[in-house]
Image (cartoon, rainbow, N blue to C red; front, side):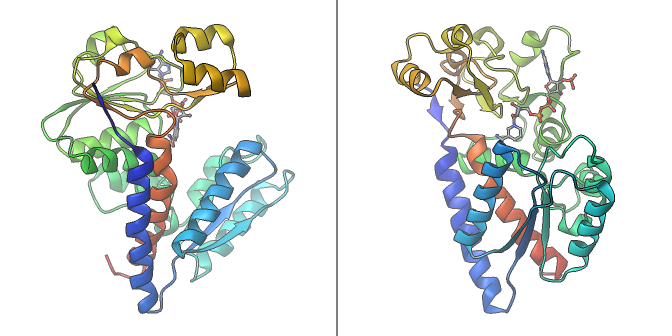
Length: 305
Ligand SMILES: NC(=O)c1ccc[n+]([C@@H]2O[C@H](COP(=O)([O-])OP(=O)(O)OC[C@H]3O[C@@H](n4cnc5c(N)ncnc54)[C@H](OP(=O)(O)O)[C@@H]3O)[C@@H](O)[C@H]2O)c1
């Protein structure tokens, strides 16, 4: 039976450690602070942001939620970011994506002070990550490393194959794995004979955004599979392709009309030595890593790291 890498338990352990760090900082008069900017009203973003603000409250981190209207201009948002950059009590600035189409997202992300860039999206932090210098790394890839490390899955010398090369998941995940001495292959939509490469993976990271894309014939038996994908499916035929015979999922699907699926086909997990489930895997660490990054930013800005 493959081992299930429990993102809920690992996320809770990280939050507990961050809480202790926040207490230690409080003892020397420092309270880390996070500003969250949520533009307009995208239902999914509102849910994510609520989770982030709640986590701050739970861990003792100061938080501020700023909610400009949908009609806000890039210039107005740049002014807001400049004001947050200048405020001493704000250690982290998070701009919830996606932004409305008329807003220049790149200009805005680039305007965040790298020292306060707790999402790790600023080119300076991307460069520092590449160069192996202390940086604020993107939360989801950092969470992947935490899952592997805390589950005592060796990384050094292993062949890690990352499918996906986005700036927020695939590329930084590959870089972090490389820094842990994995031999890393990055695959994408133009990769030839993808299955031949994924079958060589001791650690397979799927960050594609396509439900159940990694099928059993793409997996090396015994591999560790990290499924980053978060795909909500509503189509019955798609559901049956992935979950035929799974009574629990079928009941959820019947009740809600949808279910959350990763990028890995459930049958592919059966071949794994260990894997992160969806839900309950990588996604459960992202907020914990954001909290860790906020405390890290607070320490780095004050020269404590
Ligand atoms: N768990 C979490 O907290 C979390 C956080 C962020 C994202 N996610 C999820 O992770 C998944 C990936 O997110 P993302 O933001 O990285 O997505 P993205 O920006 O759309 O990138 C997807 C990547 O997959 C590659 N790809 C697409 N089709 C492919 C194919 N047929 N064969 C091989 N590669 C293919 C693309 O290649 P090209 O570059 O060639 O187009 C691209 O590099 C999504 O499901 C997202 O919801 C989860």
